[in-house]
Image 1: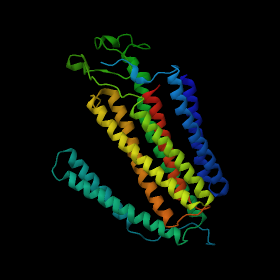
Image 2 (image 1 turned 135 degrees about the horizontal axis):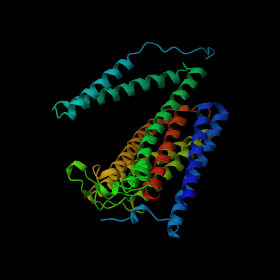
Image 3 (image 1 turned 120 degrees about the horizontal axis):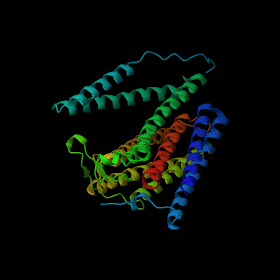
Length: 70
Length: 292
């Protein structure tokens, strides 16, 4: 399950990087690329958050705070 | 502007004022660390000079931009400047995430005897290599005993999840603001910008509340490697959200002044990207500190 979460994070980082390239390029084309990449970035991030909630609800993944405490 | 040659800045006193501000800040900080009474006020003075410099210098640049002084070549230099700034920010957070991964994946397991370190468990009797590391080993010279830092962990589904939802919502609202700007929908743009800033401020409020809870439960900057990485990462992130919210407020002000149009709005793009970046850093924090 960790692999899926990390894979989504890598794609999010890739989208953010792609938006940066668009911003660097500028102009109409660059601006379009930037907006589309950022939109993909936020969509994936919201999906990851919902996925974490669902995976936790299903018991596929456990948060760190269940580890041993004093 | 037809002239596309390299833009030569006019003479300006702002860099000198900036240098005075930085020097004053550090003289104050150095003396503050040595418990000198005038350290704090001098540092405050230095920071005030810096804020004054930012207002003045950025204001000058904004006025030059709207008066049409800049050409395409200047536009490119702004984009490059922003990308170098972003590069330094990425490396900054990479260092702190790197420290977190190093402690979790390498150094703590090594202390517990992982890899070829079969003798390290002998150093501290009863040491358990867990993450979060509750029992931090003491200095060997002081008897080599493990001491308990004793803290309760923050509940992932409490404030951290609420804060993640808040920051992700602000990512959604700034995307709508971006869309509205590109389509020339002025009122929608202003409304989405206000929503983004409000969500950012709300995030900061909850973050302060969470620090209060964590501190009350014994999790401090001194609570071993977990406490230090937790507070350094979340603290610097919170600082970045603060800076981002200030930048968004400035952009909102400039939108109301009519500085941007659907084609030409690099300042908005720079700040929007920065906000998305801060959002992604938080997502990384949420996943790696609270989940994986």
